[in-house]
Image (cartoon, rainbow, N blue to C red; front, side):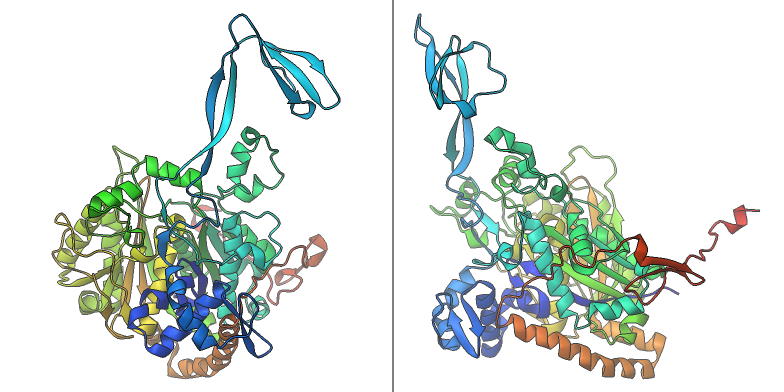
Length: 635
């Protein structure tokens, strides 16, 4: 019997805002919301952006003045909306108009005379360059004579050719929410996102530790690009070239699996399985696949899966731009025949487009096996049916798409059909496209979808592309798809590709319904969603996700009506606890869980007994009576 991986919580932070309770999703479909729902969405965003906060029964502005909330939200409505989703690069991370660089110069000495200059004694190189001679000194400076040409690097600046990005909401500063200790931005975002998912679960982690053995918990999370800002590998690689010292933290905090390490070491005290699987833009799906297989096999009962990517640095932007992958200002103006780039519409999946839009995000989901979800009364947001991963085979260009995505989409469609039936797949499923907004993607991905639709007899397969709102968060893009898809089953609206005015002529359309407007379908109209990811290097992955009403129906068939009724009763307390967190984050920015040097375990906290290995603080032992998996091969 395969255990079903049930999605019991989710949370995170993206250009749309906070993910828990579908807050970020509501930003995507803002125009379809009722006036009251719009007000709630604006309120959550205003709190996150630091424009308002609630204290001692009174709302206050960013300046600390008492305010009437509704009037304040009306005043700042456009500012809030403009400060989210894809937009012009802001200067909170760096100044895009003045990117620092060094320009090499060769200083020639005058004819028949050496070149002389003064230099601070502290700046004298340990090894004098060839041709340098110290000819004089005073208390603080040295007089240097250079006989030959002097090669120098002069500090200057240049404007960024790309000025569009999917940035976290304006004013949101994760480093200010806890003692960040020079943590790279991706790890700051990790702590906030994972905390959001854990708090929104409505179940105290200590209860899980009593119910689940320590080795039956897994954390799979990472970053495809590692931590490349100055506090991570970025500083490690260029500190000396900038005349600075390499710190003791830049190397260890730059590792790609560090988001999982931070969740284990500073949030949960987890001693179970951990790590990350890197697959470029499909990395989240790779980690989700690992978690799903663990739960299906029964080796694990809880899995926390996430990604955190903070790629908005000058170096990464320039590298992608030099590959011709990004929508730059000049290209956007040429595309529109305008004198100014339309930053808001930079990403146009399946339309006439020129490149993708880079973004930052961190997302986490919590999975339980089906029995544990019922036992603890966990909220059921859906389930992961399966995840399929395939490579492209031989390639001419490492960055170009290939055949592997045909395999992953076909198998995901087949797995979905196996659960919800032929009619369910044809009429009650939809596709979340990778949809980067590049000319190559629009051709190849639409061709794949159309071919798969033809094979399975699908005539009007709804296709969405969330990067048109959020941009491309690389490793986190699949997680963006998942948390926003959960919102579809809550609110009944599939977000349309609003930035694409019309489909490009080379886009395949047979069997597809590529949504260029919001599709109001109803909360239970769709039984399943396929989430597609395509990564550099031939990393393809497609996930099959089941709706919550389908999940509950499956649980009832396996466990019985009485078990579902008991679950509903237990779930009331869980929902109440989750709602208390929801109320809190609607009034103030929640501080992440961060337990530095907290309850550190050592060998003395372990004990061996007849039931196995017991670790202090856990209610269940680690079983050591392991079976011989190769019994038929052993004497």
